[in-house]
Amino acid sequence: MNTINEIKSLASAKGITLTNIAKYMSENSGRKYTVDSLSKKLRADTIRYSEIKLIAKALGMKLVFCDEE
Image (cartoon, rainbow, N blue to C red; front, side):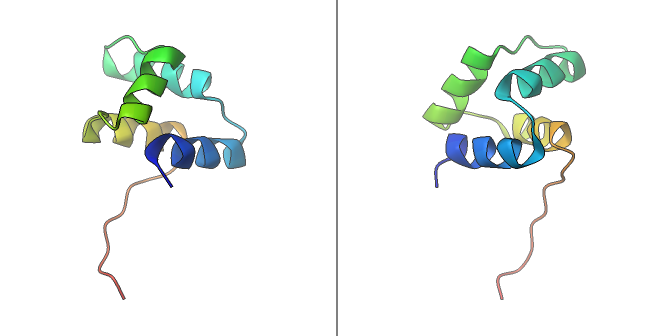
C-alpha cells in the first residue's frame, strides 16, 4: 500500500478527513498545510518524518519502530 492510501485508510478508520489532518498540522507546526499540498506530498512520497509524526498525532496514534519477528 502506498503512503496516501495508508494514511487515508487510517484516517477513515478514525473518522478523520485529510482536511482535518491538514488543519491540525497547520495549527501545530507553524507551517501552512492545505489538503491539496498534503495530498501532493503523500502521493509523491516527499513527506518528511516530522510531518508523518504530526499526522500520527492528528490521528491519535504514535509511530513505533520494532524488530521484525
